[in-house]
Length: 208
Image (tube, one colour):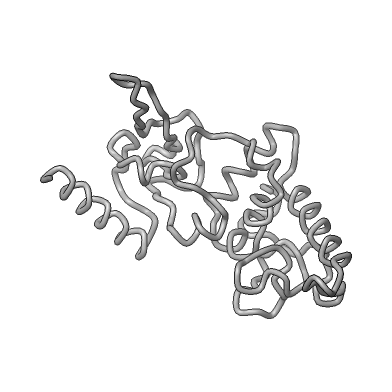
């Protein structure tokens, strides 16, 4: 009971820090609770990774470990809950993999305006994962945006679809691709203009 209460207090304290700022000094991956492991960065700049192992009686347990994947521009960082939600992530994900880039639904969230504008840690991770697979995150987002608009254009109006002229509002309210330029979430860093063309990227455009 005491251990559970201490764990809750620790999680609450860390979560409170996330609301104010994602940066935390002296962050050691192995000391993080598993609930905050994925997408965190140690104070040495190495990414934390959630791993599982087989314990006694066949039980699967989880632990937070320090990976060899380095984030060069950030350290001592626990990703904010807003970015976890906006980028379509799951804190319980095990390992670091590019497989999610094959999912249209995940790409739509990753390339959404809130994620691309305000979550540089996530963009750096998946940009590097894409490059390791011989892909480019910018191209992945552009293709995903084009597919999204084309799908909206061909939806029959009887099923609630809209014509091509209104496709830009499809993501309104949930951060999906195609959020209209000029909306409260709009930013010059978002990779797509309302006409589908690319605009300036967050951070350094050459990195994505």
